[in-house]
Image (cartoon, helix red, strand yellow):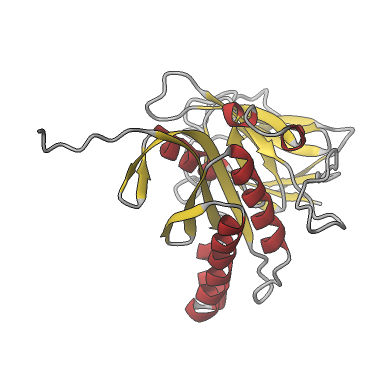
Length: 298
């Protein structure tokens, strides 16, 4: 008899929930208040996971990894987590938020942990999510019940390490309703902004429904010419779409986006909805970029 353990994959919906803006919270309110606030969020993650039939696999800093028997259960947990955290009072003026990603597929159990492509993809989806977003793979969307599936909107495709083809992703939309016990999203509601103000050097550019797009890049034909060494000639653009402003990257080195209260996100032939205020760097991270484009959503 062989001494090697045979591990048989079982299908799970693996979910990662991450407290957005935790680093900034420590910087602004101090360790004690930040730890208490983040601890409250982690307890919500655990409680809502168990209430919807899931189990917490592990906690990694300000992030929780959970597993569910079905995509529906993971979706309901994600919605309930967003709704509960949304009701928390700001901590010294800092409103907490959550980024969630989940995917359904085979994973290998070893002890109390899970391993495999499903886990890696779920983690990647959480990284792609912005504050307040629930991101799932398009394949997982097809496994949802009709009501939940109707609340999903397709986004774009992302590259994933170890995958030959890009993975199509969707957003599960949500909004607090009068029927809090239902924990279901309100469909068709626009959460976008009517105006986006860009600040670059001494120039301000306003985008709205009339002036609804602009291009960024090194080329002199760009609406915003950014002479950044790592930027592409036609680096990317911002467009008004369905009441929201979307940053789209089509560069060689990526677009680095920092939304206030969140960690830096790199877009590589991807797009992201802009909200609040933040900074865009072309071709390299914000900390090393010589040229920065600031934005404010009004």
